[in-house]
Image (spheres, rainbow, N blue to C red):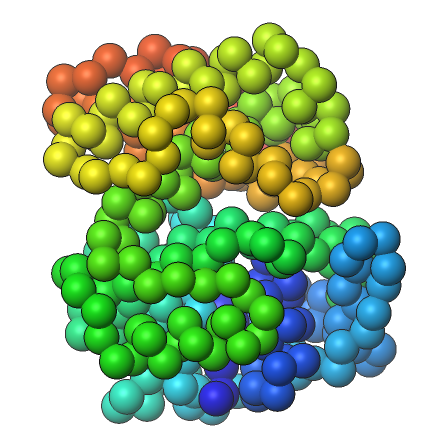
Length: 308
Protein backbone atom coordinates (compact mmCIF):
# COMPACT_ATOMS: atom_id res chain seq x y z
CA UNK A 1 0.00 0.00 0.00
CA UNK A 2 1.16 3.55 -0.68
CA UNK A 3 0.92 5.59 2.50
CA UNK A 4 1.50 9.26 3.19
CA UNK A 5 2.19 10.30 6.76
CA UNK A 6 1.21 13.94 7.07
CA UNK A 7 3.20 15.43 9.91
CA UNK A 8 6.04 12.91 10.19
CA UNK A 9 7.60 14.09 13.42
CA UNK A 10 8.85 11.67 16.07
CA UNK A 11 5.64 9.64 16.25
CA UNK A 12 5.07 9.66 12.49
CA UNK A 13 8.62 8.49 11.87
CA UNK A 14 8.32 5.73 14.45
CA UNK A 15 5.19 4.38 12.77
CA UNK A 16 6.37 5.10 9.24
CA UNK A 17 9.66 3.35 9.84
CA UNK A 18 8.08 0.04 10.83
CA UNK A 19 5.48 0.29 8.05
CA UNK A 20 8.35 0.79 5.60
CA UNK A 21 10.15 -2.23 7.01
CA UNK A 22 6.96 -4.22 6.38
CA UNK A 23 7.28 -3.49 2.65
CA UNK A 24 4.89 -0.58 2.11
CA UNK A 25 5.68 2.54 0.11
CA UNK A 26 5.59 5.08 2.90
CA UNK A 27 6.22 8.79 2.42
CA UNK A 28 7.19 10.79 5.49
CA UNK A 29 5.96 14.35 4.95
CA UNK A 30 7.50 16.96 7.21
CA UNK A 31 7.96 20.64 6.40
CA UNK A 32 11.21 20.66 8.41
CA UNK A 33 13.88 20.57 5.70
CA UNK A 34 16.63 19.42 8.10
CA UNK A 35 14.59 16.39 9.12
CA UNK A 36 13.80 15.45 5.52
CA UNK A 37 17.38 16.02 4.34
CA UNK A 38 18.79 13.82 7.11
CA UNK A 39 16.38 10.97 6.34
CA UNK A 40 16.98 11.23 2.60
CA UNK A 41 20.76 11.29 2.98
CA UNK A 42 21.35 8.54 5.53
CA UNK A 43 17.95 6.98 6.23
CA UNK A 44 15.76 7.11 9.32
CA UNK A 45 17.52 5.96 12.48
CA UNK A 46 15.17 4.27 14.95
CA UNK A 47 16.27 3.49 18.49
CA UNK A 48 14.42 0.70 20.26
CA UNK A 49 15.61 -1.13 23.34
CA UNK A 50 18.75 1.01 23.36
CA UNK A 51 19.77 -0.20 19.89
CA UNK A 52 19.81 1.94 16.72
CA UNK A 53 18.85 0.63 13.30
CA UNK A 54 18.63 2.48 9.99
CA UNK A 55 15.61 2.30 7.71
CA UNK A 56 15.76 3.54 4.10
CA UNK A 57 12.71 5.79 3.86
CA UNK A 58 11.08 8.20 1.44
CA UNK A 59 10.70 11.73 2.75
CA UNK A 60 9.42 15.04 1.39
CA UNK A 61 8.74 18.55 2.64
CA UNK A 62 5.51 18.89 0.63
CA UNK A 63 2.67 16.61 -0.37
CA UNK A 64 3.02 17.68 -3.99
CA UNK A 65 6.26 15.68 -4.24
CA UNK A 66 4.45 12.46 -3.31
CA UNK A 67 1.51 12.11 -5.70
CA UNK A 68 -1.70 10.34 -4.71
CA UNK A 69 -1.72 7.66 -2.01
CA UNK A 70 -4.03 4.92 -0.77
CA UNK A 71 -3.93 6.05 2.85
CA UNK A 72 -3.17 9.37 4.52
CA UNK A 73 -2.24 9.11 8.20
CA UNK A 74 -2.69 12.53 9.78
CA UNK A 75 -0.27 13.22 12.64
CA UNK A 76 0.24 16.98 12.46
CA UNK A 77 -0.15 19.02 15.61
CA UNK A 78 -3.82 19.64 16.31
CA UNK A 79 -3.63 23.37 15.71
CA UNK A 80 -2.15 22.76 12.22
CA UNK A 81 -4.83 20.28 11.07
CA UNK A 82 -6.79 22.53 8.71
CA UNK A 83 -3.73 24.26 7.23
CA UNK A 84 -1.84 21.00 6.67
CA UNK A 85 -4.71 19.08 5.10
CA UNK A 86 -5.67 21.96 2.81
CA UNK A 87 -2.08 21.98 1.57
CA UNK A 88 -2.08 18.21 1.03
CA UNK A 89 -5.21 17.58 -1.05
CA UNK A 90 -2.89 16.45 -3.88
CA UNK A 91 -2.52 13.19 -1.91
CA UNK A 92 -6.16 12.33 -2.51
CA UNK A 93 -7.31 9.91 -5.18
CA UNK A 94 -11.02 9.02 -5.46
CA UNK A 95 -10.64 6.08 -3.06
CA UNK A 96 -8.04 7.49 -0.65
CA UNK A 97 -8.76 6.94 3.05
CA UNK A 98 -7.77 9.59 5.61
CA UNK A 99 -6.98 8.33 9.11
CA UNK A 100 -6.43 10.74 11.99
CA UNK A 101 -4.26 9.38 14.83
CA UNK A 102 -3.79 12.79 16.44
CA UNK A 103 -3.97 13.57 20.12
CA UNK A 104 -7.05 15.19 21.57
CA UNK A 105 -10.59 15.84 20.35
CA UNK A 106 -12.16 17.52 17.33
CA UNK A 107 -9.89 16.64 14.39
CA UNK A 108 -12.47 14.54 12.55
CA UNK A 109 -14.81 17.51 12.17
CA UNK A 110 -11.99 19.70 10.85
CA UNK A 111 -10.84 17.04 8.36
CA UNK A 112 -14.37 16.22 7.23
CA UNK A 113 -14.84 19.83 6.15
CA UNK A 114 -11.83 19.50 3.83
CA UNK A 115 -11.81 15.92 2.49
CA UNK A 116 -15.39 14.75 3.11
CA UNK A 117 -16.62 12.61 5.99
CA UNK A 118 -16.92 9.55 3.77
CA UNK A 119 -13.09 9.32 3.50
CA UNK A 120 -12.47 9.44 7.24
CA UNK A 121 -11.38 6.86 9.75
CA UNK A 122 -10.83 7.94 13.33
CA UNK A 123 -8.21 6.47 15.59
CA UNK A 124 -5.86 6.79 18.51
CA UNK A 125 -2.43 5.35 19.12
CA UNK A 126 -0.39 4.71 22.24
CA UNK A 127 2.78 4.42 20.15
CA UNK A 128 5.34 6.99 21.24
CA UNK A 129 8.31 8.75 19.72
CA UNK A 130 10.95 11.23 20.89
CA UNK A 131 13.13 13.20 18.48
CA UNK A 132 16.81 12.72 19.36
CA UNK A 133 18.23 14.56 16.34
CA UNK A 134 17.16 15.21 12.74
CA UNK A 135 16.30 11.80 11.30
CA UNK A 136 16.99 10.04 14.63
CA UNK A 137 13.99 8.92 16.73
CA UNK A 138 13.54 7.04 19.98
CA UNK A 139 10.62 4.77 19.06
CA UNK A 140 8.11 3.27 21.47
CA UNK A 141 6.21 0.88 19.21
CA UNK A 142 6.45 -2.46 21.04
CA UNK A 143 3.27 -3.54 22.85
CA UNK A 144 1.71 -0.10 22.31
CA UNK A 145 -1.89 -0.28 21.12
CA UNK A 146 -3.42 1.53 18.14
CA UNK A 147 -7.19 1.73 17.76
CA UNK A 148 -9.15 2.72 14.66
CA UNK A 149 -12.75 2.70 13.54
CA UNK A 150 -15.53 4.28 11.54
CA UNK A 151 -16.51 7.62 13.11
CA UNK A 152 -20.17 6.67 12.88
CA UNK A 153 -19.63 3.30 14.54
CA UNK A 154 -19.67 -0.23 13.20
CA UNK A 155 -16.98 -2.16 11.35
CA UNK A 156 -16.13 -1.78 7.66
CA UNK A 157 -14.01 -3.80 5.26
CA UNK A 158 -11.60 -0.89 4.80
CA UNK A 159 -10.89 -0.48 8.50
CA UNK A 160 -10.31 -4.22 8.86
CA UNK A 161 -7.89 -4.10 5.92
CA UNK A 162 -5.90 -1.16 7.31
CA UNK A 163 -5.80 -2.65 10.81
CA UNK A 164 -4.45 -5.90 9.34
CA UNK A 165 -1.75 -3.92 7.53
CA UNK A 166 -0.69 -2.30 10.81
CA UNK A 167 -0.64 -5.62 12.64
CA UNK A 168 1.49 -7.21 9.93
CA UNK A 169 4.00 -4.41 10.48
CA UNK A 170 4.19 -5.20 14.19
CA UNK A 171 1.93 -2.35 15.31
CA UNK A 172 -0.58 -3.86 17.74
CA UNK A 173 -3.86 -2.62 16.26
CA UNK A 174 -7.52 -3.28 16.99
CA UNK A 175 -10.72 -2.16 15.33
CA UNK A 176 -13.12 -0.35 17.65
CA UNK A 177 -16.88 -0.32 17.16
CA UNK A 178 -16.95 2.54 19.67
CA UNK A 179 -14.17 4.75 18.36
CA UNK A 180 -15.40 7.88 20.14
CA UNK A 181 -15.09 5.98 23.40
CA UNK A 182 -11.62 4.89 22.32
CA UNK A 183 -10.71 8.51 21.53
CA UNK A 184 -11.77 9.53 25.02
CA UNK A 185 -9.76 6.64 26.49
CA UNK A 186 -6.64 7.97 24.75
CA UNK A 187 -7.50 11.51 25.82
CA UNK A 188 -7.44 10.30 29.44
CA UNK A 189 -3.89 8.99 28.92
CA UNK A 190 -2.79 12.31 27.45
CA UNK A 191 -4.48 14.18 30.30
CA UNK A 192 -2.56 12.03 32.79
CA UNK A 193 0.97 12.96 31.76
CA UNK A 194 1.25 15.51 28.95
CA UNK A 195 0.70 18.79 30.79
CA UNK A 196 2.40 17.65 33.99
CA UNK A 197 5.52 16.54 32.15
CA UNK A 198 5.57 19.80 30.20
CA UNK A 199 5.12 21.98 33.29
CA UNK A 200 7.69 20.09 35.38
CA UNK A 201 10.02 19.54 32.38
CA UNK A 202 10.48 15.94 33.55
CA UNK A 203 10.84 12.88 31.31
CA UNK A 204 8.74 9.87 32.23
CA UNK A 205 11.35 8.21 34.41
CA UNK A 206 11.46 11.17 36.80
CA UNK A 207 7.78 12.02 36.42
CA UNK A 208 6.79 8.57 37.67
CA UNK A 209 9.00 8.91 40.74
CA UNK A 210 6.86 11.74 42.17
CA UNK A 211 3.78 10.75 44.22
CA UNK A 212 2.64 14.38 44.22
CA UNK A 213 2.58 14.46 40.42
CA UNK A 214 0.79 11.13 40.30
CA UNK A 215 -1.90 12.46 42.63
CA UNK A 216 -2.39 15.52 40.41
CA UNK A 217 -2.54 13.33 37.30
CA UNK A 218 -5.15 11.03 38.80
CA UNK A 219 -7.29 14.03 39.83
CA UNK A 220 -7.15 15.45 36.29
CA UNK A 221 -8.13 12.10 34.80
CA UNK A 222 -11.00 11.71 37.29
CA UNK A 223 -12.39 15.05 36.13
CA UNK A 224 -12.13 14.02 32.48
CA UNK A 225 -13.87 10.71 33.17
CA UNK A 226 -16.72 12.59 34.81
CA UNK A 227 -17.05 14.82 31.76
CA UNK A 228 -17.03 11.84 29.40
CA UNK A 229 -19.73 10.00 31.32
CA UNK A 230 -21.89 13.11 31.50
CA UNK A 231 -21.49 13.35 27.71
CA UNK A 232 -22.79 9.81 27.17
CA UNK A 233 -19.39 8.35 26.29
CA UNK A 234 -18.71 4.70 27.13
CA UNK A 235 -15.16 4.32 28.42
CA UNK A 236 -13.05 1.18 28.73
CA UNK A 237 -10.74 2.70 31.36
CA UNK A 238 -12.29 1.86 34.72
CA UNK A 239 -10.23 3.85 37.23
CA UNK A 240 -8.36 7.18 36.89
CA UNK A 241 -5.08 5.64 38.05
CA UNK A 242 -5.28 3.15 35.16
CA UNK A 243 -4.71 5.98 32.66
CA UNK A 244 -1.60 7.04 34.60
CA UNK A 245 -0.14 3.54 34.42
CA UNK A 246 -1.11 3.09 30.75
CA UNK A 247 0.67 6.31 29.76
CA UNK A 248 4.06 5.12 30.93
CA UNK A 249 3.79 1.41 30.22
CA UNK A 250 6.68 0.10 28.12
CA UNK A 251 8.30 3.49 27.53
CA UNK A 252 11.93 4.20 28.43
CA UNK A 253 13.11 6.35 31.36
CA UNK A 254 14.09 9.23 29.06
CA UNK A 255 10.82 9.33 27.08
CA UNK A 256 9.21 12.77 26.73
CA UNK A 257 5.58 13.31 25.69
CA UNK A 258 4.86 15.55 22.74
CA UNK A 259 3.74 18.47 24.89
CA UNK A 260 7.14 18.66 26.59
CA UNK A 261 8.91 18.21 23.26
CA UNK A 262 6.95 21.15 21.87
CA UNK A 263 7.96 23.47 24.70
CA UNK A 264 11.60 22.41 24.43
CA UNK A 265 11.48 23.42 20.76
CA UNK A 266 9.94 26.76 21.66
CA UNK A 267 6.61 25.82 20.09
CA UNK A 268 3.07 26.10 21.37
CA UNK A 269 1.42 22.87 22.53
CA UNK A 270 -1.77 20.93 21.86
CA UNK A 271 -3.17 21.82 25.28
CA UNK A 272 -6.37 23.28 23.77
CA UNK A 273 -7.21 19.89 22.22
CA UNK A 274 -6.37 17.85 25.34
CA UNK A 275 -6.94 19.33 28.81
CA UNK A 276 -8.59 22.32 27.15
CA UNK A 277 -11.05 20.02 25.41
CA UNK A 278 -11.98 18.53 28.80
CA UNK A 279 -12.61 22.03 30.16
CA UNK A 280 -14.79 23.07 27.20
CA UNK A 281 -16.83 19.87 27.23
CA UNK A 282 -17.18 20.12 30.99
CA UNK A 283 -18.71 23.56 30.59
CA UNK A 284 -21.20 22.12 28.08
CA UNK A 285 -22.37 19.31 30.38
CA UNK A 286 -22.08 21.16 33.69
CA UNK A 287 -19.12 19.25 35.17
CA UNK A 288 -16.49 21.37 36.99
CA UNK A 289 -12.88 20.81 35.88
CA UNK A 290 -10.66 22.89 38.20
CA UNK A 291 -7.56 20.67 37.93
CA UNK A 292 -7.59 20.61 34.13
CA UNK A 293 -8.36 24.34 34.03
CA UNK A 294 -5.29 24.98 36.20
CA UNK A 295 -3.06 22.79 34.01
CA UNK A 296 -4.25 24.69 30.92
CA UNK A 297 -3.49 28.01 32.61
CA UNK A 298 0.03 26.87 33.55
CA UNK A 299 0.83 25.71 30.00
CA UNK A 300 -0.60 28.92 28.53
CA UNK A 301 1.66 30.89 30.88
CA UNK A 302 4.73 28.95 29.77
CA UNK A 303 3.78 29.46 26.12
CA UNK A 304 3.40 33.18 26.71
CA UNK A 305 6.86 33.28 28.26
CA UNK A 306 8.36 31.48 25.26
CA UNK A 307 6.74 34.02 22.93
CA UNK A 308 8.46 36.84 24.82
